[in-house]
Length: 317
Image (cartoon, rainbow, N blue to C red):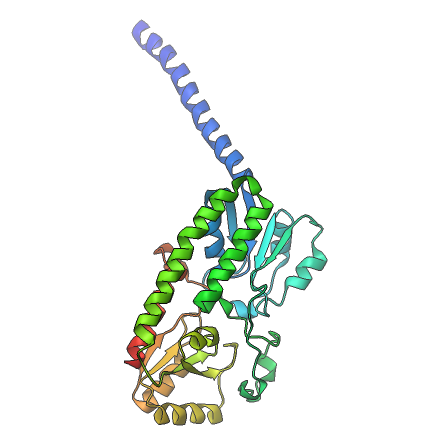
């Protein structure tokens, strides 16, 4: 009995020490999190670029939930509340976010740094004569006069990551070398990605693709590809019978064998057109947002762009 009491007395201090140790780890973890730059991003590519450049110096939250189509997403009251605690908001600009003015006018947090990643990029103006307006006014959303899908140009994406890097260096100059080093790593990856695209696509002539919506203009310009969108710059409405007839005729005239659709949008229209012309359907990802499964599987900008390359190449060869 005495031995049991002595053993118990010896055990209690050990349990207390373990408990304190666990509490210290929790507190240290909270302190580390508080020491990071608290950043919110508007769309997936910017979230990915920010995490890559910021590394363990930043805490990054993407406002648009995984698997959500960002064109029509609206910022909520809870998002505004969270942004009051943010150090930085990184957004694309060029019209894809229709809520930034609301945020700037609403937030009491006047210290937040706004980073517009499309700054100084050469933007494509929207061709209004090619907007595919077919009496869907109730579904249309004003995304401005520019094509906002800048990140699908590999060159633009690199510049957008560089803009994020420059903002972090300015905000946190003590860790400038860290951000510069991280950016250099991915700068090389962008160059490798460009080489892969050029090697596969440059030798092909008469490159034409049919896509769900005209998100790939910047990419197509770089590799001399003609894109024909079933819809215009936003995938928020279905084409009417007249537009379907136009697309089917176009596909036959240009010998198109693949109709591309997007994972965040129903493939029904693409499948209907493909069936009519005996073509295949395939995913071409505009990287506006990844699904939870893709994120869980470790997909990122570079892996998705490589899959896009394979999809485009296989449709043209």
